[in-house]
Amino acid sequence: MEILILILFCFILPFSILIKPIINGIKQKEKLIDFIKKNKIEICMFFIIIIGSFVRLFAIGQMPNALNVDEASSGFDAFSLMKYGIDKKGNHLPVVLYAWGSGQSVLYSLISIPLIILGGLTEFTMRAPMAIVGIASLYIMYYLVKNIFEDKKIALLSLFVFAICPWHIMKSRWGMECNLFPDLILLAVLCLVLGLKNKKNLLQFLSFIIIGISAYSYATSYLFLPVFVVLLLVYLIGKKEISIKRAILFLGIVFIISLPLIIYLAINSFGLQQISICGITMPKLLENRYEKVSTIFSDHIIEDSVDNLLATVRLFILQYDNLDWNALKNFGIMYLISFPFFIIGVVQSIKKYNKNIFNQIMNIWMIGSLVLAAFCQININHINIIFIPYVYYISLGIYACIEKYNVLLPWLISAYVLCFILFIQEYKSQDFNDYFTFTSGVKEVAEYCQNSDAENIYCQYSFKEPFIYFMFYQEYNTYDYINTVQYLEEDRSFENVKSFGKYNFYLPEDVKENDIIIVPKGTELGYDEKYNNKVTINQFDIYEY
Image 1 (cartoon, one colour):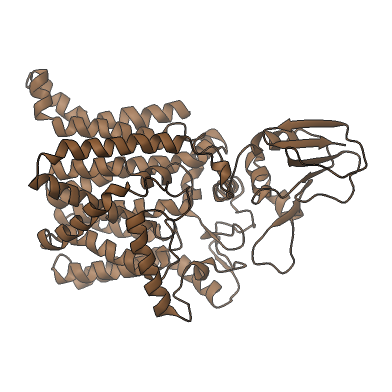
Image 2 (cartoon, helix red, strand yellow):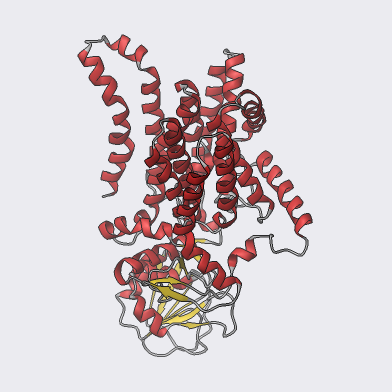
């Protein structure tokens, strides 16, 4: 299945770009050199998309080389929803996954289900949907910019910049549910631009349907979407692109689609009991994580907002948030050479293209993102919605420089290609086991334990949330988990699992016959009892008594 998906999305789908030019060339009996000259944009687009698709999808089950704890949680919940209709807390069709007690957005788990049905619950089936979304965004970016400016050259440049963007490559290669959000807004904006440009009502309605759905992709959407949608509708009314009646209808669409989330927010903000309507659960969480990452509830809201905006400026310049799984320090979000082009692009967007209605939609996107950034703890994940406009402005800046100084074109392309090659070299050498939220080597341990007749299995709590990895790799029965789970703390705000079934995530004071102890390799055990067998699997020692 992995090879088929790779061939489909990295080679067959890009070839669709050339089908129409090839057919026309055959009809007109064009010579090869004439065909290349006539269709050079499409040919360049074809190769850029192949490369961009390949670096997003190739060996995605192995790179990153460790599974993130949130990936494992989201993946198991996708499996559980598929098989039992509940998340691991037992909530039926929840609008937000219970996860660790602080919530996790549900949309990515839902779109992962088809691949899990086909290939089971694996690193590949958990990550491939994000890669496929990332690949789709390459096409979306090209056609969006093309329709904004009616210029294939600037669209091709934007595609090139986006295809080699380190942030988008990295976020497309692991199944972190929050990373779905920017791509959905990108699709919504394309539908809106096409709908307004071609007077297609269906596309306009589809745009706001997608915006409503995007609320289920990440919690920061709760702040971004109201600002973005209201500013967008007010602007379009002012430009007489839509009527007030239609704007109210669009607002109603977003409201109705996101209503279950609004109820969920009310339940968790005011301490109400969770409810289910038509089998859909609005869960009550242990902790409202949205309030934790947002500073809108701070006692020092103005001071915190200024600090957040300054942190955003630093992030724009340095392109690094000290989290190497979000961006590599030497390359950043879009390579460190790009910030001057970002500034130039912003100036171009405001001055040169200020009368372009569709360009102004991108500016509204950036304004909504900055409002979010003002009230959000700053890291790349939290404000990921800002980086597609960021790349958009970089593209405008590079294009402006090339327009004025055409001689720069080969030099700039060469510089970015070199940065891209160096980035890929460094990225593929990363050991994600160095990061506490990622762990590898548990799959074979989980399979070994699953085939064991041991009555009790004790795993030292040496890596983050070990219980979810055993559930993930064993496709554990959710009902058996719910009926047996115990937690490390009674009064808790985060669900650290102490045990479920025969699995215990602590070391006992004494071991008994038929017990298994799992510890990091080289760990000294202080038990008097002599073990019967010792097996080393990856970085773990397994002792059988």
